Length: 223
Figure 1: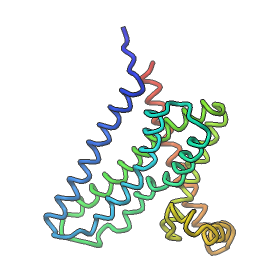
Figure 2 (figure 1 turned 90 degrees about the vertical axis):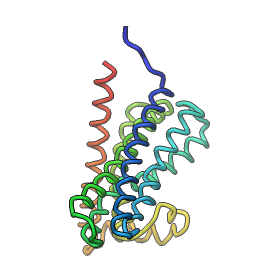
Figure 3 (figure 1 turned 45 degrees about the vertical axis):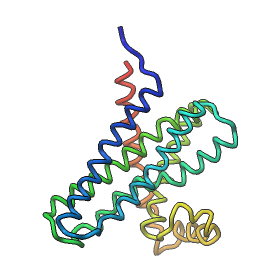
Figure 4 (figure 1 turned 30 degrees about the vertical axis):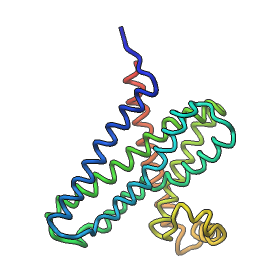
């Protein structure tokens, strides 16, 4: 007879596994700092923290309020989730720092950067599945599917805003007019639209494919 685990149990197991891989990342970072006496890659801790915010938001929403939340709470949480979601794929371009701080073998830094990037993407995907469920409960399955596609490509554009234009998630509140102007210019200006659309489509597609793979794996496990 098949045992059906509650959503709370699955959420706890997921948190434990993500904690394990996060601990591995921090362990790698501490080993590097011990060997090189340098804190060069410690910015990865902050980047991974920001990437974990969407997962924290959806976990809190499900465990405290379930799938159905009050309208104001849901919209505040959804907007916050969407603003911080790009911090996950943002960890991938951190490879631009590879080789800037020698002191350990190159393979070590490659493994370090890959570990942080994969952990950030796992946190993002883990937050997308419950958000998808909450969107279905509040609207419809069709709307939820389209919303997840949009979230992935907005995350891709968020990578461009952060990596190229150097904006942060909170600049939506801190510098809204400047941000809006730069967004419009970057999408249509001849000197910037290629890289803006390229990063958006590339990272957005990657995010969406990873999400589809995670849903497929989850579906097969539930059969």
